[in-house]
Length: 215
Image (cartoon, rainbow, N blue to C red):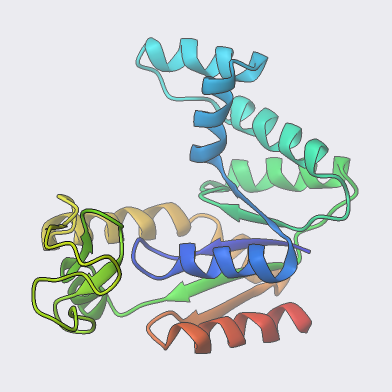
């Protein structure tokens, strides 16, 4: 099973991808993570990418394709792939088709977690974490049981991500729409896109994704 999981920051994409990895043994292929890992490991592709980034240039589609190709080779044929952050353009979508075909694979589903922008802003700007253990909380939905004390480790230090503010969230939403707009019509034409309410309860979203994968 090979799927593309789409959703703006805060839609719960990471949570759902983690569940797919846990429940189905799938591999989440995040191009950003793969690029950082390749650079750190100093693989041939990583060294090539590092040189490009040090010049202040964007990593080409060709290099991203090499990363994905290498990852699919390492995974073996029996492990499903979740593509995260790729493809973002029509050209990348075409390249992904070619890469999958070389590995005897095909794209089975494109799942988009749809969100209400105003509700998503509220969800994101209200979140904070324990500075010690990383336990997550929210101003509205999940406050510590004892005010100012982490439920998990008892720490009284908390932190918020500096980019969890309304202006940044709305900018990220706009960027997401701009990046997904070119590829969704391609997959809509193939009849493999399913849109799921990303504002629903986490378990509800998981159940809906499982229904899609079973179809």
